Image 1 (spheres, rainbow, N blue to C red):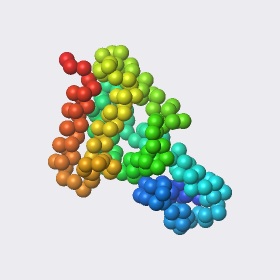
Image 2: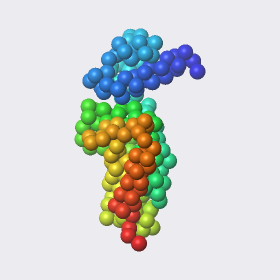
Image 3: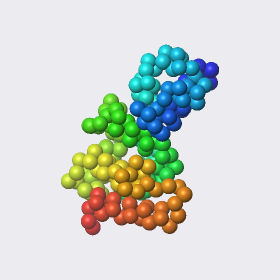
Length: 191
């Protein structure tokens, strides 16, 4: 990796950590510069502004956010559990996504301009609906949104209770089972 590429990578990684921790408004360019070893002038030359840097970070992280865990439309309960576990492993991803929602894209599709990233999942849901494996009364995007929302019940941005990797294993397993049961009952047809 060339020095410029390595510096850009350090900058994006440091900025991702800063934005995930403090949001757009609370993030400080001075801290990002210090953590990355990239001076502010170079940062602005590459990204134009703090806004541009946030957009670059979100674009850089977006594919990982969308594909953090394997997706299987025929196993939505398992997908919800895998998302729950990913939120425990990488809480900064859900925080970064939430800050983007709160401070940058307050309404509409969070993935606007990047819908192609979710399209394969929506197509798989539609195919599973045609097979009678997922309820047909909902649009694929609604199914996908509901699974993500249910998986985030105990996420780092939960309004009620945030789980931690330090929680007792029995608590995690109880939550996983609750997710499996709820998603299965809500989104798969009754036998």
